[in-house]
Amino acid sequence: MQNIETRQELCKYARKIVDNGLVVGPGGNISARAGDKMYLSPSGFALEEIEPEQWIEVDIPTGEVTEIGLRPSSEVLMHLYGYRQKPDMGAMVHTHPSHCIAFTLIERELPIMFPDQAALVGRTAFIPYLIPTTDLLANAVAEKVNGASSILLGNHGLVTTGRNLREAYYRTQVVEESAKIYLSAKAAGTPVPLTDQEVADIAALESEDYRITLLQKMK
Image (cartoon, rainbow, N blue to C red; front, side, top):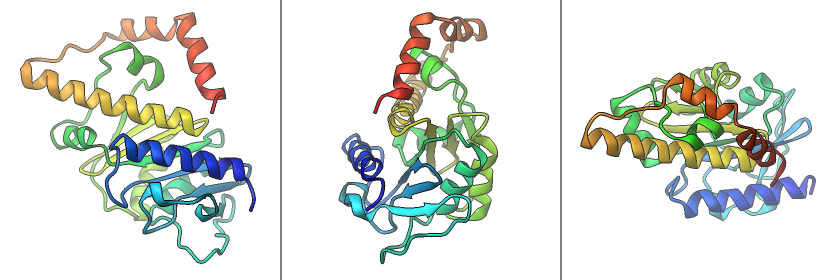
């Protein structure tokens, strides 16, 4: 079995995603890159059920799937096109967080409201509802991955990317928390986001730059 460390890392974050309620049942799919290969969750499995040997190996340049008797996630094209479009992308996490989905039912642009959101995520892109598993959705996500590390999918969920699974997973958590904060604030009054200058000031902090660099390197 090739790339055992990548497979084990996928199992680790798959369980974190389920434990934190970011998907329910067999929803969601995640992947990680190892060289010219990506390893993707198989179709029909709840994420916490997947064993290291069950992650589906897909050749990124050709799209060829290594046959192990299981089918890749139905969102295989979304992951594949993303890696092709963004060569420095090391992982993609697609989840169905409840606050993110609720946010897309009433809004499109998620404002930046607190320092961790500014430093770890930045601007969040938005794609209006497209039928899941289609090349339409895959192409729409691929068009956004170089401009944003997090993409809200209308009436559907969230896609985050990162240099590794740790970074992509933390972005998922931060965007879900951001959507929750926004919805709570809007229910009580008018949300007041950070200004462009305040966001730029956070990005310029040496301490934040160090933290983000550490996050990208660590597993």
